[in-house]
Image 1 (tube, each protein chain N blue to C red):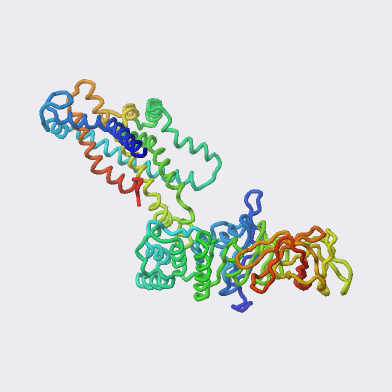
Image 2 (cartoon, rainbow over the protein chains, first blue to last red; image 1 turned 90 degrees about the horizontal axis):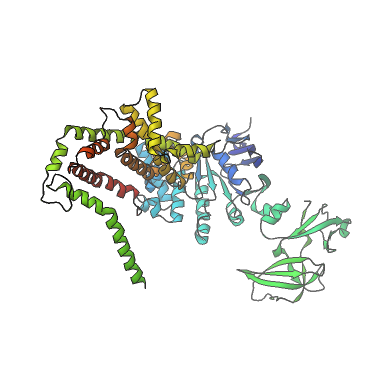
Length: 356
Length: 261
């Protein structure tokens, strides 16, 4: 028998959903620990929302099981799963006041009047909306509505929090503010959370672990650093952040081991590098160097543009390869212009090697 | 330029309003006239025709019958129509398009055809010339209106609101009565209101199915026009208009007006 702290708070075991001949979700398995915040990240149609809806009980899985602690909840209806879900469009009850929205769930759970009032006061204070208790949802801003949705589920003290792209209808500034607020409330309550998003920055800043999904399958599970620095598939490397891709093969042994690109370009490899067919390098790992530096690649700046806080250059190599380079904008750093002849290089250890 | 087109618009609107409302004004005016047949403008003033209406046991009985028929039919149609609309909007099933057309078809049939068809069917079933038969016929007639209006409310209804209710611990029934029903209430009330009005002044189908003891108000009025044309009918009409103003308009303003908050 497993000890309590090794039992995952939420466990998905081989969860699949097939609609007709379309596989929306294929064999998704995942453990979420107590208090952990896990983001399901992927492009639209990757199956992340369907997975969340299977956890919540709105979509019956074709196969596989959902465990909450030790209990198999796969067959339980959504109203008996004890999970609090926050929806993209808030899904507040338009005909009820803020207070009544919060009280709805408490009544469903047959709480006594005094306890209901106590919890309503508590959660409205938590989200800073005590003054709006008697307003209707349509009288509130988007951010306030999302706070009510959050308060409504927190009042029930659920076993698990579920978020379905809750910030995508908010404007940019508010979205960033709400990230912190959601994370603060989740930490305070110590409840595990599953957060669906297509926004990589949101997933990176909020999650303890990220589950990257594509075409109904899990591509990779890892911490934000794992996902960015050590992507395991081409999809993950491409979907998260910007990246330069070189296709080719690894040749030679020891210090003579190099990556031969199809274009004829030879790139250095770290010692003991495994065989690979794709070499990936992040644009910010590349630096402008002097011509005679080790492993320098010469080329010409064919494009220079400013992206908020940094500069992005496209350097065209004689082999025909285009390399994206990102550099901090600093007063002392040299600014390259289009047409400049430059040399670029990166530490071999920063190259990511993939076999797909 | 805007001023010119605006005043043109006002004139056109005024003419349309006049065209729509003038007949009603004429009917109300003739109800107070002293002459034994409706004339406009009325000569003299009297409440005699109202007295004729209110002191006629047949007319009062017919008004009661029409009101009862309208209420019961509306209740049946609203229940059936709401359930049908929910099924049509929420679920995917085989033959959904055909079912949808079939449920809305009573609106498209000529009333004479529907009346005859119901007479043949109801005679065999023993429902012809009974109150239940009339209720059944009117329910058939007005259910499509309820379906239409409830479907319109449901179409703009975000179903994640129902999912939120389930997620918060509400079962199917509680979700329906506490969340779905209150939100689609405007469409439901609109359907019920239209249904009642349609039932209350339905004549053609009712003529086929009504028996000796089942003279609804429209049938009574229709019959009385055939051999007399005294202003009692104008008085009845005036009473109906006042009833509508007192009961129907507040419901309309409260739940159905375009400027709803």
